[in-house]
Picture 1 (cartoon, one colour):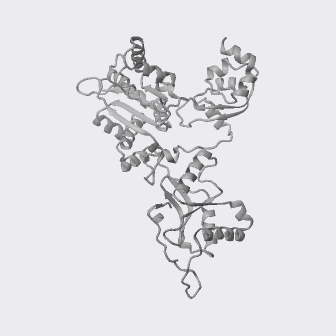
Picture 2 (cartoon, one colour; picture 1 turned 90 degrees about the vertical axis):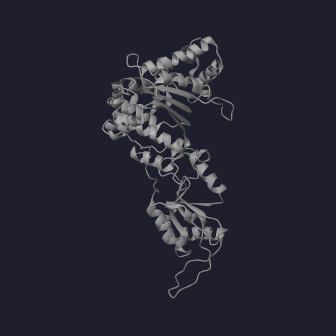
Picture 3 (cartoon, one colour; picture 1 turned 45 degrees about the vertical axis):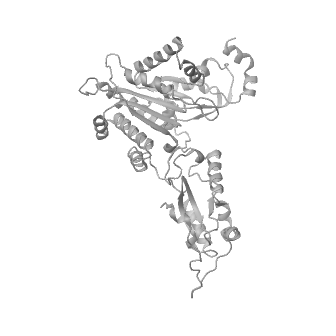
Length: 454
């Protein structure tokens, strides 16, 4: 029985068991029964939806929520562009996606960013690009070899693998090699079938929008066309508005592993980096450089590349004035020098830390309004991961609320001071003439080794 007929007769039953459906635009328009309405329809990559197509799907829900990248390179009549021009209420999401703390392999680095969650591999294959055929056969064959090296996860399942090529012909060549392996039933063909069952696909870079993978293998495809190393002119396709959009997509893609195969010499990459006006090749060269730095665990080089492409955005403390007011209020009860503002501890930015009196005491983290995130919305999983890690490291967490402080700051400061004293006890002060507390005994603390963020 066709899926459309199943949905037609029992859509209410389907949604009772599956209240959340992930579908393509084709399925949304052709399979969902006419007249059925969801409570909410979410458009992902809304900058790729035309107004005409979006209007047809809008009737599927009582409410619409759209997500997209305002990179100014998409369709000018996109749903996202239309919403912005008509001043639809919007929230800007920063491009610093962060992995759960426990998964950060470089978590000992105080400035760890979300890219560190990626395992990166870059290989310069020095392949030859065939301009007439639009393919790089050496890169295509190497991808087949890489597929045999894909390992199962600890849960004994294969990761979802995506393969992306910069030309349609290269995509077709890779697909033909995979098909040939399965038809001949050679060694490794069963693994290919298992990967396909788990979501593996081969895509032209334009088809990557809306696709999510654990592992992404990128075939840059373009390269030298002769023995002298002359670069193909077709690489200029990357410098079109669409090409720039594709590169920005690759840079921002959240992945567990990124594998980049390219055939550019060091001279080519240096030339790309020197021509910032050719933004597509400029972005590609820095993506390769950034991935190489992550592969080599070169923190300084990595952060340099990250800053060049505008992705190194310093974390900021939300409502810093409130935190300063809290410190001023606490000065009547504890020594102000114990209060450390804007402390970066591993990948967490702590608004306020009160150090212990003695070296064997606990550091106390004061969390304004209950959340670490500096955005309007946050993730419960992300917040809990940070809380778990801090508690494991013997931090004491105390939440305070700005609304309560506005109502009665004196009572709230007394309450917070009593909580701090309860954890670490009351310090012994040497009083001066003006009865102002001086530095308490035993001020040294390992937290002083971490960065303070201005």
